[in-house]
Each structure stands twice: as C-alpha cells, then as structure tokens.
Image (cartoon, rainbow, N blue to C red; front, top):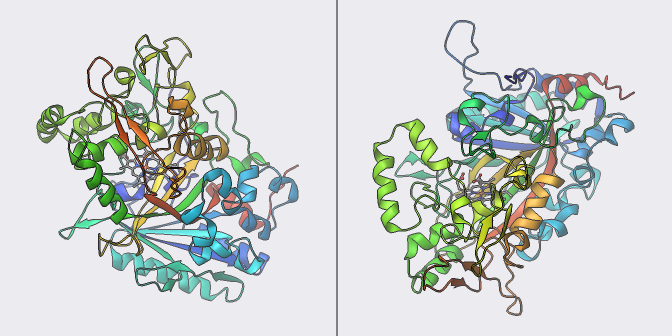
Length: 520
Ligand code: HEM
C-alpha cells in the first residue's frame, strides 16, 4: 500500500532540508506578541505566504520553486499569547511547555553551554513576558540578495503591527554586535558552496526516510529501518508528523482537536558553537600517537571521513578508503548516495571500524543495540530475532535534521568568534526522540557498553581535571592491537541557545489565525 501525505498541508521545512534544494542562505527571526488579536491577524497574513511541502516543477500546472521560502513555528508561550483554548494547550507535551532553558540539566547544558552563556535572546527567553520568544519565522533563499528581499517583505508586514508583534533582537554576530536575526549560510571554500561544517566534515548525508515523503520507497535503503530479512523499509510517518501512526502502531501524543495537531510536528532549535581551535589542537595532539594517522582519527570522531563522508564501516582504513574513493569518483549520483548511506553496523559489532562513541553511531546506532556479549572480550554479536525490526530500539529515536552552519571562522587558532551550526531537529516526540538521544546516547554511554563515556564530538566533556572525559577507539578483537584511549577530551561544541517549537500544518495555521480552535 502506498502512503500518501497531503503535502499541501505540511510546511515545507518539515519535508525538505532546504540547503539541499538550492537555498544556501537563511535568516531566522523571532517575534514577541504584545497584542493577541493583532498577532492572529499577523499569523493569517504570514500563512498566505507560507511554503508548503508540495513538489515543485516547471511543467504546466506545477508550482514553480520559489526564490525564497517562508515558514513559521510557535513556542508554547506564543500559543498561549495567541489565545489557544486551555484544553488544547494542556495537550502539548510537558517538555515543550517547559521550554529548552528549563530542560538544561537533562540536556547537559552546563559549564560553557549553560544558559548564562547563551546569546541574549535565549538568555532572556521566558524570564519576562516581553522577552519571551513567541513566534519563529524562517526565511530561506537562493541568493543573499533574495534573502534580503524576503526580510524586507517581513519588515514591511511587521510595520502594520507596530508595538503589537515585535522582533526580539539579541543574536550575537561575528564582531560581537547583537543582531535582530540569526543568519546562516553554507560554508564556502574558494568562493564555492560546500556541504562542510566548520570542523571540516562533510555534513547533511543521513536523514531519515519515512512513509509518504517524496520518493520514500526509493530512498529507504540505509535511511529507513532495517528489516529482519536484510531489506530496508521507510520509518512510520508518526515518528515525524503528529496525527499519523508511529513505529509503535500508535498515534503520538498530541493536542486536541485533531486538526490542530495533524500534519504538524515539533522542532528543536539549537545554536551550537564549534570550538575550532580546540578541535584542531586535540586532533593534532592525538594524531601524533594514533597509529592510523590524523584523517583516520578525525573519521573515528564522527564515523565518516571528513573529505567525502565515506562511512568508516565501508572504508575502515587507508587502503579501503582509497578503493572507496576510486569507486566513488566513477559512480553516478544515485550510486554515490547509496555508497554513503546504505550500511549497517552488523559486521562491526566490536566497534573496530566505527567506534561506539563516534557521532553517527551514537546518534543513530541502526540495529546495533540489539546485540549480546560475544565469546571474545569486548566483542558484541547481533541478537537476531530480538525484535521484528532489528533496529526497533533506534527506530523510535530518529531525528530529521534541518538548518545550516552560521558564521565564518576567521582565525582557526582561536575558539571565540561566532561560528557553528544552527541545528533544527524535527520529531513527533521531543522527549522520546531528541532529549533521549541527547541525554542517554550523547552524554552517557551505557547503551553502547561504554560506561559513562560521552559521544566524542557533542558530549558535554568536563574541564575539571577530576572528571576527565575519555573515549575508547576499539580494535579488532582478533588482532594483537591495543585499543586507543582518547583521553582528556575537551568541550568541542557549546550550546549558545535554543527553544522548542511547534510547527503547525497549514490547516492548523488558518485555525490559529481565525481563533476557531475548539478542543471539545
Ligand atoms: C556542532 C554540532 C554538530 C556537528 C559538527 C555535526 C556533524 C555531523 C556530521 C559531520 C555528520 C555526518 C554526516 C551525515 O550523516 O549527515 C552528522 C550526522 C548526524 N548528526 Fe550531527 N552534528 C552536530 C550536532 C548534532 C546534534 C546536536 C544532533 C542531534 C542531537 C545531530 C544529529 C545527527 C544525525 C541524526 C546524523 C545522521 C546520523 C545517521 O543517520 O547516520 N548532530 N553530524
């Protein structure tokens, strides 16, 4: 049976990572509501311009790809200001109601990542009503000049709502100034756009595929869920969209009425600063001792090689990487895509190829958690038959990733400045998906038989010498090699702010704007 989604009803940024669709620049604007009825009128006007997920094309009757896109989302406080009925507000999830700042302890946002170090807009959020972030507008454009045009459109719209809906400033910029918006842009090299982030890794490869998304039946290999017979299937829609059945064959918890929730979802917005100088120093320092050399070591941090994203399970050493590169260079786009995504950890239960603390293994362990202790020390083997779908434990923790890098690295010998990633993760259940991954898999290693070792790249590693952070780079248990101990891992990524948002469907937007939500 083919699942069909009403793409005209779903906001465009839910289905598409705009960066991969020819939009290399974006601007994120956050608004505060001072007058509820006028704010609903503003939402009505924006809704008329909101970009849906409908497929674009140049044929007669098709909708042309726009030069810039508009999307809108709301924080819990914003929905309150828009006068949603109490019974509907009560149906939103507790973590969404609390907001990201309140959830800092469970997210591990401590030390340099603590809210007191966030950009002023996020630091003041939820302190007083006039500093609350209520509405999130995201503008994505094909060119910087078109982005400017989209921002002018927003400003001219807001001019009709003076003192009723206002922009909240307080985003740190490159020169330390505070801006009214957060700009993001792909990383440029020699004047050309790249798929890189500021540590030098190729990003934006693995994004889950779910039922009903365009071409979902063609793209599930490596991106959907592993099945018992070795095939792949798309994930259930309800992992990413409310009002649809999820991997547990249930509807994810959602507010009433159904039309408010259906085809909507939750979005986790996080501004993550990258300590490039610390990263480079740490890599150089360990590369001197690591037998595989610097680039293999960098690949071990993430699970993919930096230059082309080759997965370590397919290219675990210099020789296999050279073979991978040769085949990759000759492959067509579809084959390349498959080479990058279509793999499992079934043949790497010891972690000898991709370590248990590598970024992509911790964040999406595929079916590798359904394993039992093997007969060799430190070696795990697959436990077939544990579940109908071998990746059942991981299938409920998947995240759609949106967003782009921000800022430019002007001096790689310094950590300060303003550069990192704005990551926006879409999931139907913030607690079960994003928060679980962040707490249990990023900042703790027990599920990976790695004790309290944190994920290498993102872990909230402590600078306190009494609690040094380490990670083990496993080796083949049949070899005489010793595992490599990555000791004294510094904090490589720091949180600079963020919030949880609700991304309504187009139907729900119209209902919110008209003030006609009836939860009974
Ligand atoms: C500065 C922070 C971050 C950097 C530099 C970074 C970098 C990367 C890179 C290089 C990849 C491999 C390319 C790919 O598969 O697309 C990746 C994959 C991924 N990252 Fe991150 N990331 C960051 C933060 C996060 C956060 C906070 C999350 C969620 C908690 C996350 C979730 C993911 C996911 C879901 C994948 C795909 C894994 C897979 O399915 O195999 N990332 N990231």
